[in-house]
Image (cartoon, rainbow, N blue to C red):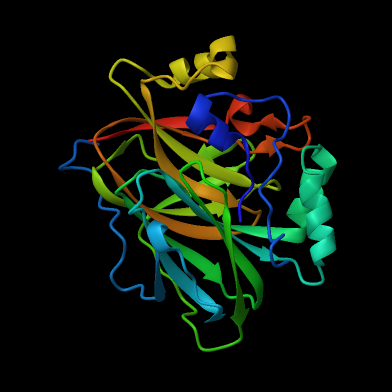
Length: 297
């Protein structure tokens, strides 16, 4: 379950609309140089339950014991793939969620939706043939869902129940600690070693956040991205050939923590949050300074 927000617009058009885009039908179907760079490989000692989702034949268990769960998305399709997780707020009804979803193009509707759902992160766009792993905090029993998007096809909603039980209750991480805080992305080092890189995201702000990664061709820098986002071409034209989506952390609600492992190739990267600012008529956070860059070597 994810909000169909301007992040996807950037991936397809590198555009920033001035209004909030309607989210997907959430629950509607069922309620330094490389040698000197520090290692951020996923810790072998952390062993939460592991679940693998294949884009070509998506499936998810109907019931899971409460705890931390490692979810690996294998994109064996020909298009991109996304997976986002959320938990329904206790007492929220299907009718309430549907109503908030239908009205989420307004700031008030979007705020209402975030009150009915707690977003737990997941995987932003995963290129064809790639694999990403997210460690999710599912310690709270309740109704959950994963919203899968494969290529340009329709969303697939897989709901499941987290039950009280003896699941993994600890998830250590030596990943890069990243704080998503209004309106900054804090903690990313200026240089990261190439390969499998783990991040631990914490939303320390009062609004929902995400972190999308874009790799730029040689000669392009963060300033070029901002210039494009502000330009008529960025609003209406095709995506620039020099910007390449590399995935990232999907929507994360306030006070939530999630881990994500990505495989990064050498190059210049820009990290951004495209979530709408509910205090400023839905202006994307990236336009308020929630953008930074780093180099992978």
